[in-house]
Amino acid sequence: MFFAKRFATREVKVGSVGIGGLNPIRIQSMTTTNTRDVEATGEQILRLADVGCEIVRVTVQGKKEAEALEGIKNYLAHRGCFLPLVADIHFYPPAALLAAEFADKIRINPGNFVDRRATFKVIEYDEALYAQELLKIEETFLPFVEKCKRLQRAIRIGTNHGSLSDRIMNRYGDTPRGMVESALEFARIGRRANYHGFIFSMKASHPAIMIEAYRLLHQEMENLGWDYPLHLGVTEAGEGEEGRVKSAMGIGALLLEGLGDTIRISLTEDPCDEIDPCRRLIRFCETGRSVSVFGSVEQTSLVVLRVSEKDMALAAFFEDIGCDMRSGSPIKTMQSADCLWVDAIEEERREALRALGISVCTSQEEMPSGVLVETFPCAEEDLAIQAAAAMGSALCDKKARGVCLLGNQPLSVRRRISFQLLQAARLRMVKTDFISCPGCGRTLFDLQETSRRIREKTNHLPGVKIAIMGCVVNGPGEMADADFGYVGSKPGKIDLYLGKKCVERDIAFAEADARLIALIQCEGKWIEPPGKFSLNLCEP
Image (cartoon, rainbow, N blue to C red; front, side):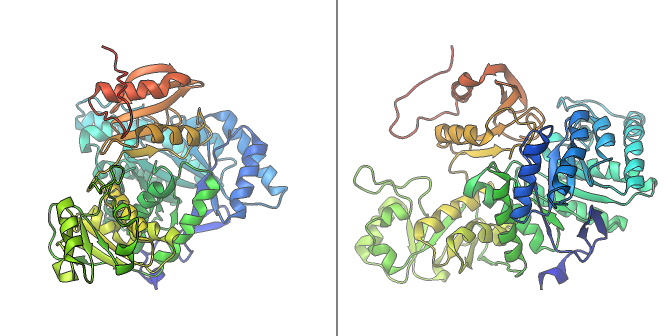
C-alpha cells in the first residue's frame, strides 16, 4: 500500500487535525474573501468544510485581519464547524504575533517575513554581513516562535520560488537550493528554542523546480535527522485542465515517491473547486502506480496517439489528431500528433499522414524512443490528474520526452492532455503558459473573470509565459519566471511587468488588457490570432 512507503514524519497538530505521523494526507484550501468580512469569510469556510476541506488558510495583511480571526472562529463555532484556521503572513511580523492568538497555524514566507521585497540586484555578502542579516531574522522571528510554542500553534515555513530574498539569491541563486536554505535558516532558530511544530513547503509555479526543491529538502532533513511534515503544492497553477495538470504533475510525483503529508491544488477558480481534484489525486497515488520509458531518450518531445480502426473511420479524424481543417484539407498544427500507433492502415491514408509530417507505427517496437506508454482505464475527468501524477517525475526529470496515453477516452482528449503534459514539464510549448494565482483576500479585481478574458486574447502565443496576479504580494515575486506580468497594484489599477521589472504603473483597469497586448507586441512576442486582422498597439 502507498502509506507504507511514505516518509515517516512526526505528527504536528493544527488545531484538532494531525498532520504527518500516521494521519492520512490532509486536504487544504484558502479563502478568497476579505478577511475583515467575518460573515463572508465564515460562509466560504463552511462551504469548504461541506465539500471535504480539512484545513483552511486566510490572508492576514495586518492587525485588523488578525483580529478578525477571532470573529471568524466564533462564527464557525456557533455553526458547529471547528475547521482549523491558518493565517497567511507576508511582510508584517506584528500581524503574525497577533494572529497566533487566534489561528491554529501561521504560515510565514521566509523570503519576506523579515527581509524586504527582493530587488534582484547583485549585493556582496561577506560572512560578517551575512551573519548580521541572520541575527536580524532571529531578533524578529524568535519572539513569534516563543509565542507559538506557548500557545501550541503550528508554523508553516512556506518558501516560494518567486519570493526569495536578495540575500539568499546572491548566495545560492534563484534555485531549489536557495529555497531550501531560506527555510532552514528559520527552522534552525526555532529548534534552538526547542520548538518543533514546523511544517515545510517549497512551492513554485514550474512543477520541475517544485519537485527538485522538495526532494532536496527531504534529503537535507534526512541528513540532519529531522522529521517534519511537508505541505505540497504548485503555486499559481492557473485554472481548468491546465491547472490540474500542473498541480498533479508536481504533487503527484512527490506523493508517489512517499513525500507529502498535506496538499493543496491552487486554482484560479472557486476554492471549493480545489477539493475534488485533491481527492482524486490522493486516491490515485494510493495505488502506487508508476510508468516506464520505452527506449532511449531523444531530444525531440513527441505525442504518440494509439488509434483504432474506429477512430480512423470518424469524419472528424484529422481534427481529432490535431489538424486544422478550415481550408477543407488537413494542415498540421503545433498541436497535431507526431506519430500514430495503429494495428493496420491503408497505404493511401499512410501517405496522406506522411505528407502532413505525421509518422505511423504498427507496433510498440516501431515507436520513437523516449516515449512513456501507459494505460489509464479511467473516466475522462480523471485522465489529466492520473497521467500527470504518474508521468510527472519522468517528464520533469527529462528521463522521457514523449507520451502515449492508452485508454478508452476520446482520441481528441488523449491528444489534448498529452500536449498539456509536455507543456507543464516545459518540454514542448505549444501555447501560452499562464501563471495565475488562485486569489485571496488581498485580490484587487475579479481574478477569475480577468484570467478568462486575458486567456481568450493571448492563448495563441506558444512559449510566452504570462502571469495574472491579484495583488502586489502575489505579484513581482510569486510570478517568478514569467515573461509578462499583469498585477493588481491598487483598487482599479494594474501594474505591468516585463520579467521581474515593473515597466508601467497604475494603469486604469479598463485599459490594462490593451496595454498588456501592446507590451507583448513591443517585445516582439506577439503573433496575430488565426483569422484576425493585424492590430499593432505598440507606441512608436
